[in-house]
View 1 (cartoon, rainbow, N blue to C red):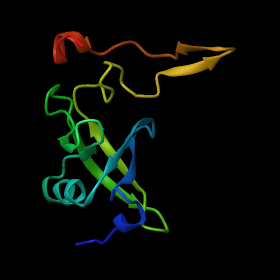
View 2: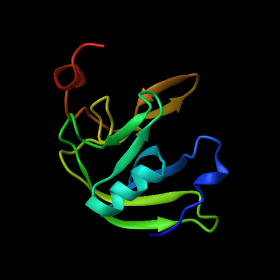
View 3: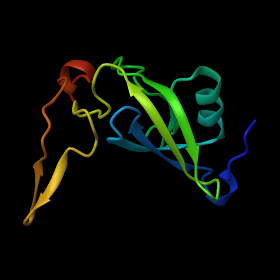
Amino acid sequence: MIELAFAKDTNGLLPAVVQDYRTGEVLMLAYINQLAWEKTLETGKAHYWSRSRNSLWLKGETSGHVQLIKEILVDCDQDTVLYKVEQLGGAACHTGYRSCFYRKVTGDALTVHEQERVFDPTAVYGAK
């Protein structure tokens, strides 16, 4: 098993930058712990640690928008990973956009940047 530096963070979490393996588009940033790392390596599907739910999370478990791992890069300090993925279903963001980085700063506001929703999050996750 490849050892990452989970002990560097008091919560045992490391950032995972997620990128489309074909285009290089940054899709999201999430966090992994040892369990998420092991499940990702074991299954070839991206698993993360949900800080809000305090639980293991298989990306796409509810929405069907799974991330298949194509390549994993590890930084020099072994405390950040880059997942290059095939994004199934077209959307990485729980808000329904392809990328979590769908807004840009325009003056003193955030505006949607060159993206349309792939799915309606209320229909997928229910009302919030």
